[in-house]
Length: 234
Length: 386
Image (cartoon, rainbow over all chains, first blue to last red; front, side, top):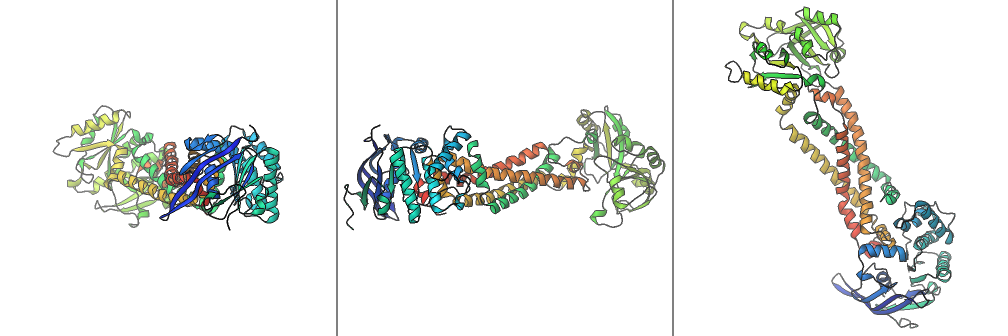
């Protein structure tokens, strides 16, 4: 796979829905190519469609028009079970609200995606420990989410996202709930994952500082993807 | 699926108070259900105790309140397979007062045949002889003697109601038996002497001892055939166990009654459990969304939620079975005319049925919340607030 290999390819991607009898166009005719090894920040104001685009990339939602291929797969043609397996193997998610399971320790949270693989308990444990060490939490394996700071929780979430060694990492406002220092730590880890481990990362953010960690920034406005380098009018 | 077991267990224990209360409510309901199922099993499915398996009871076909000629005894004894026949007469009467705690079974019987019919009675030989020798002697069960503090030689007065006679009995023998230790027997001759000529020579029931359990149905049919169309009295003969259950049937459709309560208990606890599970799942919709993004399929998520509900229900079921077993012990030690209640216990089939019902409650109560949680679109699930 060359660095120019297309990981995400969307053409005329459109998402419309009806909410409270109002017809909403969340995304309209979006064309985008994201290549292997890119770290793309999707920026835009609330309601611009950036999270919707992220959801379509992850097949968490379906487009009402156009088409999208991710890692060479037409996700629309896959069954629920196939998409679940595909997500487990190929995509890591990072959320704004961390979304760790509160009754599980850091190690158990990170181990969760590995329960869907053929690894035995020891191997799962080793992989999860390695991932936690990679994000600097090797000494917090047995801690529950409530015993961790926000920044630490988000680092556990990153470890969970990378533990299956996915090709693509999708992050939805990963620094939105963090103080400046913690946000910087998280962005540093994402940069490292991109530069040292070649992960393709798509990050939704409205924080210009966070977007500077990305190798490419794309702006959305009212559901439309602006041409590269163009900023929204306001 | 076992890979998810730690997560299932941890989720069960996520809200300890709610889980504990759910387990207690399921346990209490299944305790009641267990006892009812044990009673149903004891009445309708259990084999009679060995001492009862060979005994039959013959009564007047019309009603137990009508009597039969005592001469039937010799005719019954001629039937092949019959080892012994004894006349028995329910005396009724009052001991001390009419309070229920002073009510116990009192039978006029034939002392020379009693110990053959009731071979399970353990009585010292000298006491047995004393009871058989003296017309006003009586024999009581050890539990009854202990209850009233009776000792050999004590006088016991029973005031008659069905019969116009007050019994002045002397305690000459105390028997012990594995099941029934709460009956008083006295000599039928004592009763006969006190009756007018017109009322003598009758029998309330005939207690028959068969030579083998296989002979029991044949003897029952033979006895009733023998006295069919008899001008004196037609008979109805049945195994002693069936005879005792006849008393229960007299109260109404006991089968339907027991099954109705079992159904109501199951349905009610199912609603309680469904409410709890719905609440528990509703609080975790976002987590379900997260699990989906990690690659968990809707089926796996549904399986985990169902597993959680079934685990909680089964724990409740096991506790319920334990409590039911204790309750059965209390019932066994209480005075009871129905011999089946003396053997009441949570047998393996009853325990299995109880646990099965618990698992069923868990499955059914969580099916809808589990289904809807597993099918919630990921985006919608992730938007849910904690």
